[in-house]
Image (cartoon, rainbow, N blue to C red):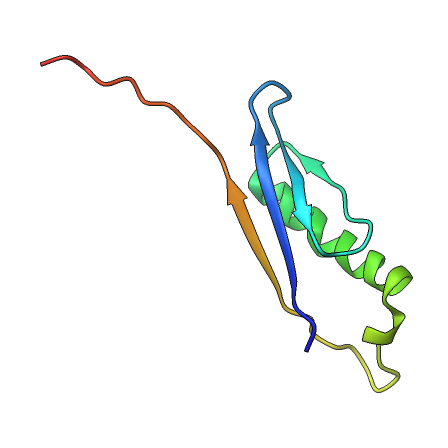
Length: 82
């Protein structure tokens, strides 16, 4: 079974989430929130797999292809002095 992985990172300067790593052929995306990124990936991944991996599609009906979504966001916290 083929499994796909998508890693999204937060860009502080651009204030967007973007796909930083993926084994989905041709996948690029950016979105302002994690929720909107997930919705975008729900559309874009099947489109790209249909174009680049037609072997994953069956005439018998829709197939389910698992993918792992990882998110990374580095933050800093100011520590109060005692």
